[in-house]
Image (cartoon, rainbow, N blue to C red; front, side, top):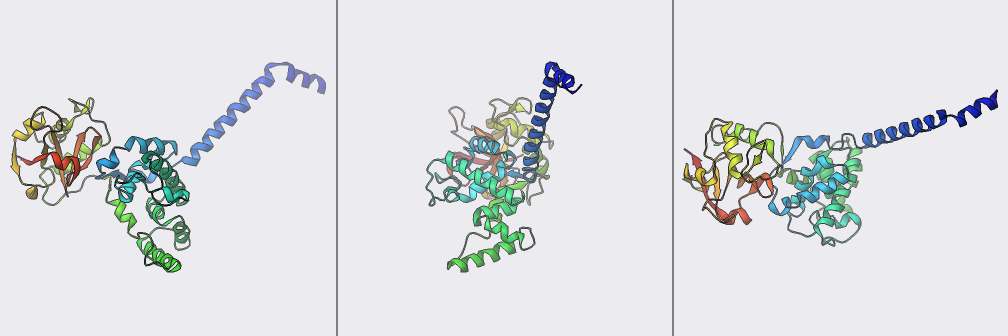
Length: 328
């Protein structure tokens, strides 16, 4: 009877079906395990959006996204780019200052893409060890992962007080005047902002919060020539016209027409919600670009690098700035 049963198993489709079932089950289990390993990796980043990333760093966004996606931490892109602003501001070939993370002298890496690749891999290791605590990760990127061990022994949560204590301890151990940057988290956070509703800005124009809440919905989207609504995408004046309309403010369509319809004001008098105009960004009309002024020498706009914050204090936009304008 036993021989007959075994013969049935091996001479019928039953065994084949069983093998297929086992393989499928193992595959599903493996995929579930991999998903669980990365589950929540980017959950803390949902709080933050980029704020004032320079063109020198912003131009590498696709590279940051490529390696963040590869490492399974795509949701951390804005934080990583903010960190890069603090590390180099895009003014070094070793853009993430990641040479030391693989045991090389500072600035040994001379290829920005390689620096990003190495830096993001290191960021992930620190992020996982830090229990996905963004602030602990950032400070440990600066101090080294030993700071994570120190924090775990002293309450388990990042605080600025612990950062200062750790810096002093390490400086004494090394015989140095100082160790790292205990203010590193705050310095990185300058380039990040919460995704909660835009808070009022002193002196901002009426409707500023509504305007920015709408405009920020499209941050990171590509620039689209002639685009004037969410379905088509936005060019510079299309984004301005659409966003201001949400606050009940009617503006003409093009940058030149918007320039013509505003009262020209000095930079010192400009407040959040005023418009800022540029010329010579391409051949043609005298006014070729417009952005929403957000204060502190920054604007929000749609340009060739996408819909983003841009710095007006120096560089390309400073060179082409024509005037600030207040809606009449």
